[in-house]
Length: 325
Image (cartoon, rainbow, N blue to C red; front, side, top):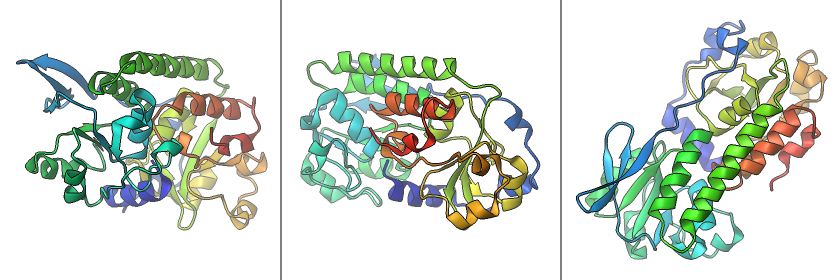
């Protein structure tokens, strides 16, 4: 997803306040001593029943899959990339203003999704609207009330992405969609295996900074956190208790990360000067990780994961992480 809406959405969705990092008083959490468990990725599956197809989510709720999915509106940049990759941009009749890849989506009609522009959606006459389970959960009832077919997807982990690709491979129409879905899943699975195979020892300790002033960091529950886990890294804010929250400078100094990844803006020079003994600063391992292919769960994720693994293992210089493919 694009950075600005993601950051605004995340803050609003989580209702930031309180902090696992600050509660810890700077002590290194027990969860930072070993790799954390990956998020559950079995969020849904397609079932055929009563002559129709249904998307059945892990909580038991189900949504009917429309008989035709040739006019699709995507409400998230990552979903736009996936639809374009699997079914071509001709399958898309509308996207959000933040969708910028592939370039062919630029001329498509733009629809506001926060709040959900129901009238704008109806004017596009979509067969299907693709939404995000976290950011658009409150919009599902509204869409159903207006009889706009919609499906919710999850994208917080590599396992989620595998499931999403499999589901879209069955939902989207067009020649070769299923084959492209299988190919993307194979590339992603190969990238995960390769990233783990080259994992450095001991596991690098990483802090993901989402905002520098005041200091805000990412805990478990994001795609980038899961990608780092696949690379054999440990998130030193693993005890945060939420995907994003404030973090004290004392905690940063005490937890001494080997790497600092900034997901929104470069780390200011004055902060680098204030933290000279933090291993990440001393070794020049403070890296901007804001590129779209690192932030979006989509067809570019396998290559982004390979680049991340190569950087943290020392096979690529740190500045290469900021290069979008």
